[in-house]
Image (cartoon, rainbow, N blue to C red; front, side, top):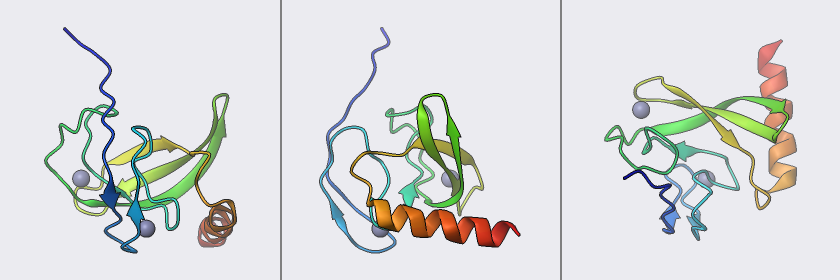
Length: 103
Ligand SMILES: [Zn+2]
Ligand SMILES: [Zn+2]
């Protein structure tokens, strides 16, 4: 039987050490937007990589805005939807930085 797994767990950001209260959806830090490589499929926590994932790109699609995270360990890339509780000013700064790096 396959079920969507929604685990509510608190975690600490490996990059900026912010303590994040889990809501079962967010897997990235709302302050610095780093994530951790723990999933193979969203929410399954089946990856044993555990590498730090950095936001390397940003985009928009029908469902809303997303960040592209790249694992610093295995280089895998993953899209993550931007969550409502992500810090909007920090997000704007990040997008600005990404755009500057792209030039
Ligand atoms: Zn952080
Ligand atoms: Zn990885």
